[in-house]
Image 1 (cartoon, helix red, strand yellow):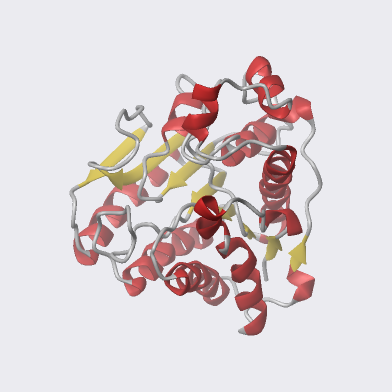
Image 2 (cartoon, rainbow, N blue to C red):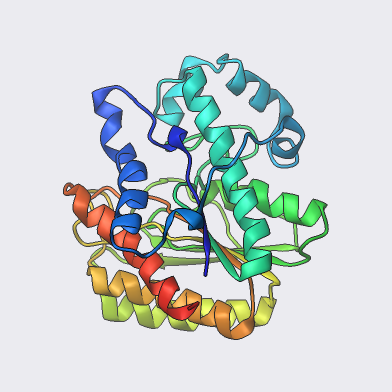
Length: 300
């Protein structure tokens, strides 16, 4: 059915103040296996992305400073994590996972990375817990290797994909679509090819109506031959930072909208997890697992 990237480095050990949002990367594959949504044959462990592939997207001087742990205190503070070699290695493996998923999606129609969606990283800086922009790197790799000609990045995380938008300004081969909270991080938004700003407290019915209208019209007009989907679950009403009012069922219907369109149009799609910050970790994990369940039903 579909292939899923997971690596032991995803369950990175961080100081207590940073550990909670990382726990899901260990729990998601465990629950997928426990519920029988996937088996071990669906899982693969990516390697380490090479420097030249990173440098198709990110500034060489930024990447050199990042990997050598030489960012300034201000630059490190913007990322939000204390930098160390283990974190850099995790990021490189995560990025390679999204690239590998793109290859599998071309063959199988869909593939998942159980991490990824690091959409705040831009050309020469990281921020918002994002060091490298995995979907942007994978998109540029597909273009560079001529495996795709027109790519759409569909970002439905509650936060604007500002790094993704900045990276693809003036690049007509990539269409950036971001549907996000108007009054949410980042304070300074970039210009995606299509930005849909949502009012605080929007309900699921109105959210889904906007999504179906705006996403489908943009996708039909642009006609991509590949889609990257950031399926952040910080759109849930339970999320500490989301400011929206979507139920788990609404979140699953959001995924259905994307998957049914991709399947009907025969567009390969790579899915990354994006954000999720509900106080109860089970709310986060269940919502992410529901994304897999939705895909399993559509791509059976």
